[in-house]
Image (cartoon, rainbow, N blue to C red; front, side):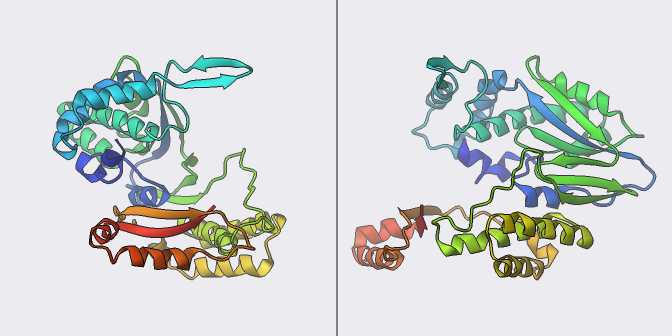
Length: 339
């Protein structure tokens, strides 16, 4: 499942799937036809799990050549059922079993959801193109989603959004798409999408539950980790926000969050300056994922202990002098990591 939706997502032809913020920013339409009024629409899918096994069998059949022969369709489906039907949890001295959906935190859940929605999309695009080729092509080119959260900029005058939602809900008896729309702004992922004079803009979006509890600067963590957090957050804002004055306002807001967590002003300023220096086009470049396997050496951080990184690297180089071990280590990317 994981390999289908990450490494092999291009083979699945699921054009709508967005991997993250940057992927979404690369797909959103910035300039819209001037002779039309538009709506920003987000959709969410409820109760999609009942057709899951049907979808799994479809993808296994379609991409059988991508799956090692030792994994039969029966084995894969039984494994999925084992995960779906054994979500047991403990609360108030009682044990419960979840009867619908996937358990939160299950590694297979994101891939499973993506494949189920992708299966529905195959039917959707086919149905729409049969009835109206222009309509079908518009949906295929503009409909994007992150797992089961969907987004589209909808031309009001041309087609009715309610009709499209109705068509989505007719794809399967056991699913239900809910939607929200606005002609000014709407959040998707952690991005606020805004409309103004037939142009879309993007701004940052925080959920109301976000307490901005970034790692405390006095925590016992490696210094390079604490240095990187303000820079990473500043880079994220510089990537998302189109308007420079809005960007600067959000960066100042971010500065206050980090000052409250004990970060020195200079460290925050350096992170902001480093992020601002990168052109927005570079920040928004979709990176090709490195599919090389990673071999991490994880050890506990303690300021009193010597850094093990160099020792481990030397040991790995020594192991590579053995012919068989050299072959094993050559196929992986080696990293050290502190917990």
